Image 1 (spheres, rainbow, N blue to C red):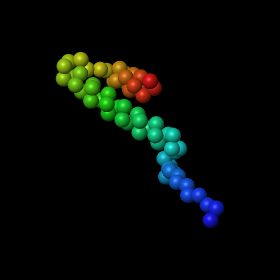
Image 2 (tube, rainbow, N blue to C red):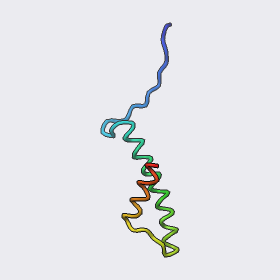
Image 3 (cartoon, helix red, strand yellow):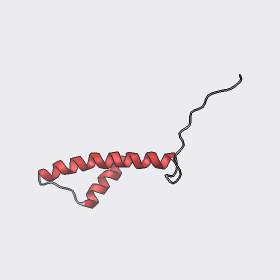
Image 4 (cartoon, rainbow, N blue to C red):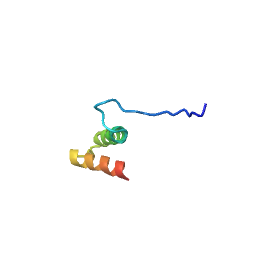
Length: 63
């Protein structure tokens, strides 16, 4: 038949590129992890400020 079968992941309109979707999902996962740690720290009276929490998210995501 001289054909090949190809699979493709195509984002729905309005959601941006596949790379942007993956980046958003990765940031959501990192934020959830940092949020859990932040909650535990708050129970021990060692909570992070919003800026410190955002910094931790960025450092975790970009390293």
